[in-house]
Image (spheres, rainbow, N blue to C red):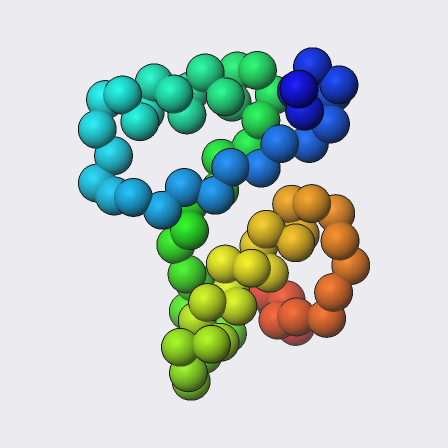
Length: 76
């Protein structure tokens, strides 16, 4: 329904390693206009707690959704 209405679909995938079924399904979603965002934390901001590590994934999803928020920015 989201893709049919041309709204933004963001799929946060967490299970790894991916098998061929996962990869094909992610390719299908991408070809239909969705966004695949692996739930892989980043460490550029040097997080010091589990909450900060999790926040790196949440921040990426908020960015993809176009939601303004105050967070670490690369190069700042």
